[in-house]
Image 1 (cartoon, rainbow, N blue to C red):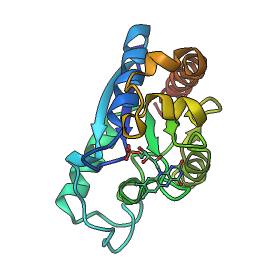
Image 2 (cartoon, rainbow, N blue to C red):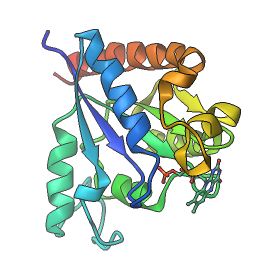
Image 3 (tube, rainbow, N blue to C red):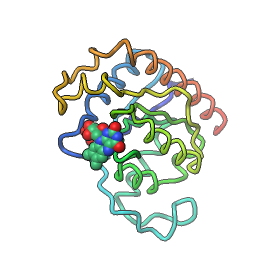
Length: 194
Ligand SMILES: Cc1cc2nc3c(=O)[nH]c(=O)nc-3n(C[C@H](O)[C@H](O)[C@H](O)COP(=O)(O)O)c2cc1C
């Protein structure tokens, strides 16, 4: 079977985002395995209105051209890793809107997260997993949570180094678990969809 194709979806769009650092890190981890093909999908490249369709595309064709482009991109993948900022104890507004702007493209595929924040994005990951149930995604057990003193050690906005190698020992096992889970479920669900 060909390698599963996994999107690494960047959920923060703000100019000074931390997101690029964990995105590059998890991309490199995935590429080092050789059993998965990954592509970064950046919400900055899909500037959509707040959801204004008559219904989700499970029930009515989408009208907004950027949302259609977004759906086509999401449809290309066998699974998703969200690089997840936590805003006010949840996911970013940009990501919630982007999740709503597709439906059938997410169905019956695995998802996981590389979350970060003072509490390791625990709340954002939980909210995302709940949304994923309705979108018929498989939520994998292992997720990366960059939190506490580790988060502040590497976050340049808080005087940190900007280098996840400095906290590698704490987060590499979770990344391996996340990628193992995503690859297993991507293969299983791809075969089942086929
Ligand atoms: C609007 C807003 C709300 C935030 N709320 C939380 C929060 O609830 N929990 C937390 O740990 N960090 C919170 N933070 C801090 C973020 O974890 C930190 O700014 C992080 O860098 C955001 O990701 P980004 O830089 O990729 O956008 C918040 C930041 C912003 C801008």
